[in-house]
Structure formats: C-alpha cells, structure tokens
Image (cartoon, rainbow, N blue to C red; front, side, top):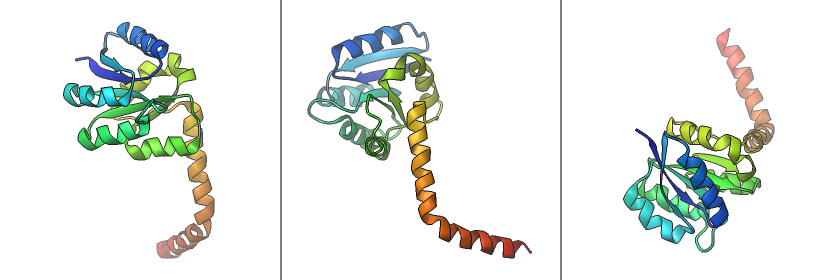
Length: 161
C-alpha cells in the first residue's frame, strides 16, 4: 500500500517540482498540494494522509502553527518540515509543534524520498546540517549541567563497589 502524502507549500514552482518527483515514486501517492495552511487544514483533516510536507514560511498561518493544529487533531500524522531556514529556534519550534523531521529545501533532491519512507517507518529524518545543530544544542545543555552529572557519576561508582 503506497504512502499517502499532502503538501503545504506557497511557492508554485516548488509545489510543481515536488509533485513531479513524487509522481515517479510507485510507493508514494500525493493526494493534494496546498498553497497555504488555511486551505490545507480542512483538506488534510478530511483526507488523513500518512505524511504531510509543510513549508515553515507560509502566508497567513505559519507552517509551525499549521503543524501544531494538525497534530492536535491527527496525533498519528507524520509531518516533515521543508524549509530554507537553518535557525535553531525554528528547528526546535517545529519539533515542539509536532514535526517528525526537518529537511532543508537545498537537499531535497537527494533526501526527500528516503525521508518520507523513514518518517512513515517511525524515524525522524533531518538534513545533515539540521541534525548537527540538534546535537550541538544537547552538547551545550550537557556542558551547563556537567557538575550535576559528575555528582551522579561519582555516586554510581561508589554504589557499584
């Protein structure tokens, strides 16, 4: 059974390109492509695709707000953010809103189909640069909490003996 998919992207050229790439994939069926979140919400809620590709920077309701609203109504929906933005705050806002992955548009030609398959299989695909930002974020948090970790580590050593 093919993976059903919808697209929310304001650029007509990008929508056309995505649709043309997806048409070539026998394991993926594109249900509809929307130019904005306001049009997408009712269609996605009624069609219930497996995966939705959402641009962050949409006219009107943002892609992040769209994701939050969709996930509130369809908690099992898989959402992949598609964007040109690499800012950490947008990455984490998207993930907090319920996105399952985050892809940069400049890497879509190589990453799109595997990412759709991965997210449907339960993965959390991210472009390489985005994954590095997420890892770096947690490394910074770890440095801030390091004294506490040392105390736990010391406790664990004593407990084992």
